[in-house]
Image 1 (cartoon, helix red, strand yellow):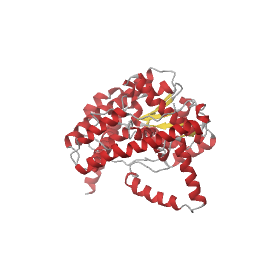
Image 2 (cartoon, rainbow, N blue to C red):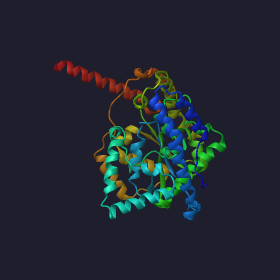
Image 3 (cartoon, rainbow, N blue to C red):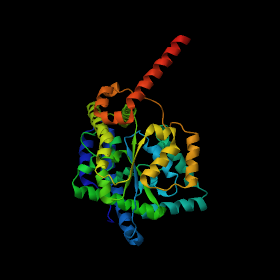
Image 4 (cartoon, rainbow, N blue to C red):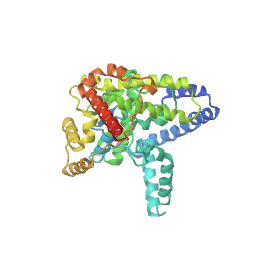
Length: 398
């Protein structure tokens, strides 16, 4: 496949949903994005994507061998696992800017401009880009490290195709659009979507080195195990698990803050989207293990977030053993240093379940098998006891 993928059905649906936004300024901005900016970007990508097949004939022979997919509920440690493994030079991963420019021709043109800027212009444009990065990503960096040269979720490559779940950070319409249950789509639709993604990965490997292993991180791809295996039969999976009392309200808080920041958004739509995201969270936790159980010969590593944070070296060594990967001594040493300074890479804020109409009992019931497997009940008991001891200590000192 050397044609750019564009999801016209979702594009039309997005336009319909935007028409119902009550805030006029916000509605005009999104309409301009969908009617002008996105089509122009897609057309530019499409032209370059087509030219790739002519200018770089080696792409036709390039293969993606045994890629690794890091998945799990958002806020469960997928970013940490991905970052640790990206330090291993045997892997290739998309950086943020490379995801926004899927064609190989586009990537090579940017690299040429960067070389000219460095050699001729004294990095004048590089400094301006750094300032732009600070304005663009600065507010989010305390929550999630972002930058043009930082590896990011592969799902972003579908943004200008209108097929990316990132659109849901702009619009609270989770009940109207489904970017998660890809395995439930018709086979032909799955193959078109993931076939395009496979060709994007081939371009990235052509750029980074064909002998490298593609490493992907996508929390939202928990619902496309079968779709991934259809185009990558030798795929390998790393599945992260973290206490849902921490991850679910944290994700809901991020989404609601993002939606409210967009402007005057219908409060009823936000409530509907919160309910839809909660149901989706349960699927995100349960579906990967169910789907992978149908493929017992597929290499897979199930990782407890607490172990990854506390003992990154030992945990990554186990991941490599489960996936049949080799670890160099240099990479092992870098993990050893990481373990020496092991600490949580995220903030310790715990958001209220009640804020979103949830309680512990509902989550415990929906995810009972996982609570038993990962002993999250014991973790909650220990946390409550620690809080009580702290409160008692404060009172006694007072």
